[in-house]
Structures are given as structure tokens and as C-alpha cells.
View 1 (cartoon, one colour):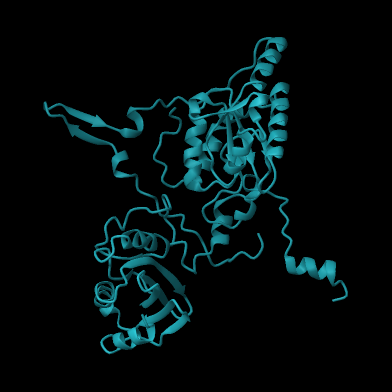
View 2: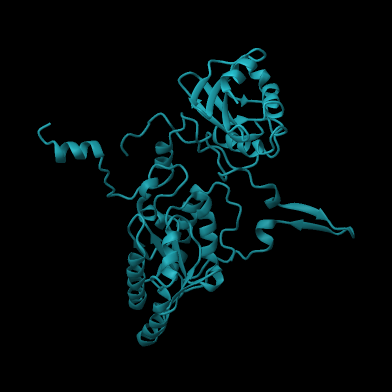
Length: 179
Length: 230
């Protein structure tokens, strides 16, 4: 399967960004029209042979005020992986379309994203259940404005006497004392 | 407390609601009888642990300690990567059984809890339950630097830093991870401590019970078990 040809074909009907041909078998492309996500996914699954959802993950672009969702789809017969990227506005509450009915495995990913990034997927089964964390009341911990060091210092007691050797300082003082 | 973000304050206001199945409720039986159910109180006893007093005579106590030191039964409860180090220890390569140290599958049959590495808050809850289910005399060994000061998880939001805030630790074995030889040496050291009558962790736990419970509850926000129930 020629990915350039596929992207060209899709671009005629969907609003796609510039594709990145990372490897011969790995391509990334942005979808600029979020409402067309389900239509595109169903088309990719049923017509183009991308039958397997490899993963669904998120990136927190805090500077741009956006969340990026990546839907990694795999076409086993053609040995091609397509990473479809969608950008959401980073303002509470963050919600997005659930795709648990297209791939049931998405349910688990969506539960994880809800807990770790606070991205809700209304209608996804058990999406409000706890996934990994238990009794978590703070901000979702994978968001970049969550300071894990400050949280741990405010929650757990330090044992005095712990020393940290920064490799850079250590090398500077031991190997290049002249400067 | 270096490079700490001053602006980030953790949320200390929000209470985690008690799970629905743990809430007290009233149930009407098929025959019309109305039953009050409080899952946290109905099935458990609330008696706090008691200090186990020493024997009346030093000779008898010394004999007890000799017997305790030679009867170490480890609870097979692996919490972190250290659980992997215990596998060669219990198999012919290092063979801890020749020292009379053996593993048991349930807390009721064990008297030594080895916290083998990092302990997340979620696992801490299970570790506390396992520890409280064990029968006295019981001992705790902290394995690896994670149990001592957090180790490589020193800035993690979900792993504890000091095990002795939550459970009474009799002995630490340092390392990341300590090899089975270190574990053997540590267990031999534990035997000496027990022999000297200094492994008083369980009594310490009973004496400072409120302090331990306050520490445990400060990190486990969904505390849905009785304070001492086993």
C-alpha cells in the first residue's frame, strides 16, 4: 500500500494536515476537522484495511494550550501504521468523541486518558471508574502543570541525609577542575 | 527542599467519597425484616493491637527469641522489583531454606513481611492489611533504597518515601536492588536482632498506633477499611 497515495485519496474528502512519512511503514497525519474523526476512522477501518487500533494516547502541549490525541492504526496485511493526530482545546472540561463502538479496546485507553489527563469521553463504558490511581483527588497527574516533585514533597516525608550528585557538576569538578 | 515549585499547592480540601458498597444502608429482607448494614463495622473487630509483653524471666525470653530467630516465615508478597531478587533466594542457587527461612502464601502463616522495593500508595494499602493480618511476633524488612528514602522514585507522586512512617521496620537492606547475597546477609542480621530481643516492631506499632494510622490515612485518601480489623 502506498501511503502517499492513500493520504492523497483521503485529503480529497477530509481536512488533513501535512503528512510526516517517518519510516517506510509509519506515517503521521493531522486531522484538522475534529468532527470528522469518526467518519475517517470508520473509513480507514472498513475500506482501507486499518483494522487494528494500536494505541490511543495524548500529549499535553501546555504552551500552545492544546491536547494532542494520537490514534495509532495498523494495517497488518500491508504492514503499515498510521498515526492520526487530533488537537483539542486545553480548557476545562476537556471532552471528546468516544470511539469505543469502533474499537472496543479504546474503552481502556479512554479510561486512562480520563484519569491521567482529565480528558473525558462521554458515553464510553466505565470511563469515570478508577483506572490506576486510587482515591485521587488532585489534578490529573500527567498534565504538565501538575508538579510531581512539589506534590511528593508536600505529601511524603523526606529522610534527611539524602545527597544528589548531578552528573554535570560531578564531571565538572572531578574531570575538568580547571574549568 | 530544593528546586521546589512554590506555586504548586496540592489539593488538600477535596475528600474522597466512601465507595457506595462501603456506605451504611438499610436492607429489607424477602421476609420483610429490615436489616441495618454497616460494611466497615459488621464483619470486623475494632480492637486495637496490644503490646506483647516480655516473658517474666530473661532465660525464658532468651529461649523464645532463639526459637523466633530460627523460625522465619516470609510472606510471599512482592511489591517492587525486589520480588525478582527473592526468586533466586528461594531456589537452589542461593537456597535460603537451608537457614530455616521459607515463604508462605498467606499472611496468617507468615511472620516476616519483606517490602521488596518501591511501594505505591495503592500497594501500601494492601501491605498494611497484610501486615495487620500477620500474627505476632512479626517483623518487617525494607528492601532497597526505595523503602529507605524513596530511591529513584524520590519525586514520584504516587510512591511513598519512608517506609517507617507507615509500618514499623526492623531492618533495612540497602541497594538498588540488593542482590540475593545481600538479602541473605540481611536476614542473618535480622536473626541476630531477634536473638538479642530488639526486633520489637510489632510492639512499636501497637504503642504508636495512632501515629501510624494518622500517617497511613494522610496518604491513602480512600480509606475504606476499619482501623484495625484483622
